[in-house]
Image 1 (cartoon, rainbow, N blue to C red):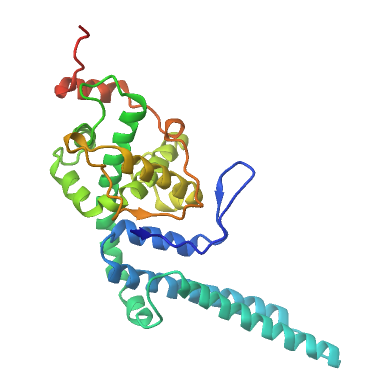
Image 2 (spheres, rainbow, N blue to C red):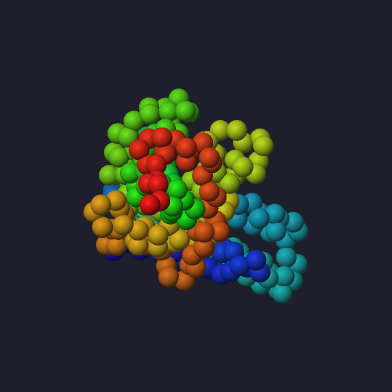
Length: 299
């Protein structure tokens, strides 16, 4: 069983939403899992590179503040000299704490940082490919959950991963992509164990498209999704619970593996999917019905 360790101070705000103090490094961890769910060594290199860049930016920030505060007339008294000395010590301690926190959050050590930072551009191309597969696996689980929440009796046999796959292939075809099940099934094989995290990201992306008329593409900028990291984790917890309890078609096995699926700390409260998920459009339900999933007439 794998659990994502979160070092941020997790709390609920007045609206009942999950709030995180410093989500930047956590976001890098989440993205690394989406792209390389089974490749810990590659995740470590990627996180080392991201951490190194964040440390560099953070140190530049603290250096600038230190320079601004300590510039000016030299201390004219012993008390002012002691105050300046104390401030220098505090800035040094703050920078050291920033470095320690940055390297505490990924599975590795200081060793790979220099080499990994140099290879970050090469890893970025893998990020783009991996995010496509993560999105496909996430959409498969997302559509299955929507069918389960809102369309239990509208399709013969009820909700299933198979129906979700058929519909996703149809949606991709209408968007000019390959309208076959093959890329979806391949993505599920490689990214099944983080599909709940991807489903949460996909749902937030769809909500952004619905709410923002300026966002016209299904490829929502990731930073807009990462802005809702707290909600992303809560929805991930919800999709995880769903996947661990929903049987996949005829196999009677849960569609997510309890031993291999990425886990989150228990202190992250899930959200009610019934409230969070919108129903499918009539067009999509009609498509599934015409495929072979028409409900039987009542006797």
